[in-house]
Length: 85
Image 1: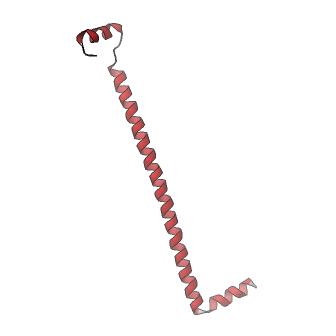
Image 2 (image 1 turned 45 degrees about the horizontal axis):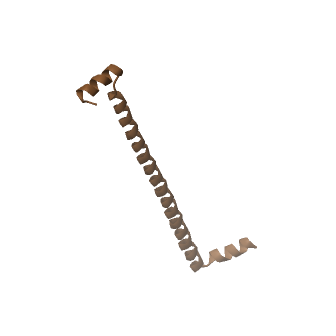
C-alpha cells in the first residue's frame, strides 16, 4: 500500500522536482547543523586552551619565584641586610 503511494508520487514530474528540492533543503540544513556543532566544539577547545595557558603561566611564575628564594637562613639574613629581598 505504501509502496504503491510512493510509486504514484514518484511518477509525476512536478512531484519528483519537489522531492529533489526537498532533499537538497534537508541536506543543506544537516550541513548547517553539523557546521554549528563543529564551531561550538572549536570554541570549547579554544576556551580550554586559554585556561591551560593561564594555568601554565601561573605555574611557571611560581617555579621562577621558587628558584629565586633563599637557600637557607644565612642567605636570607644576607639578603635582608643588603636590602635585596
